[in-house]
Image 1 (cartoon, protein in one colour):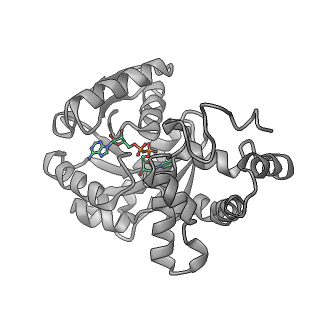
Image 2 (image 1 turned 90 degrees about the vertical axis):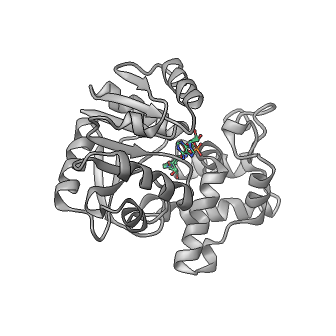
Length: 272
Ligand code: NAI
């Protein structure tokens, strides 16, 4: 199958790698041709094998493509703009999946204009290691699209869980209180390493919640928190001001070298 992956952050790169290693032909695209090329080089450097090529733009990537998975920045306006381009350039059977972690699949379906062919396929980080994919079914997603998506997930050796379009879906919603309380502890002066060590030792989680948020990217986490707050209107979803401050300062987590941890001087596991 020919698949297009748009957005080559950690998620798009990992999804492209998983698709290629399952035998699919993958075309990767980022915001510019240069970013597409450097994303591909990064996938190769991370050990990605198989048929992966970089395309200069989404229009050229779409020729004969059967599936497009978007993993661009977690921002509805950006996703809407991309989907309008995909609608104009894609074939009539193109299946379009969003890897969004919190935004509405229904809203994206409308922006795409053919909501029966749009679905959420929410991979987890890192996609090469995490087995679950949440399959987010919108109100107008067609049965054929659900079926094709389930086959795609199966072809990748992943486990699918189907859920309806709802803010934060299942896993991120279940984790929200954990993230919130962990951040509140930090705001109250507890060291991130102490919170994480406690969660690893006491909950058996492989990563503490703050290390996980640094790994996710605090900008993406903040966007999910804002979606949950806006949609549910419940103050328990409000972002902690310290997180907003870190994002504003560009300290968005591990990839930026600084988030809850300063990676120049400590690694969360050493801090244990
Ligand atoms: P990121 O924000 O680190 O990277 C986004 C990438 O998309 C960048 O390479 C950027 O240049 C590119 N991009 C932005 N606008 C674009 C456009 N219009 N056309 C083409 N490329 C564009 O994002 P990350 O962390 O990889 O996440 C991507 C998506 O996956 C988001 O929707 C996020 O919510 C979701 N997600 C993130 C997870 C995580 O742990 N980071 C986990 C599961 C889902």
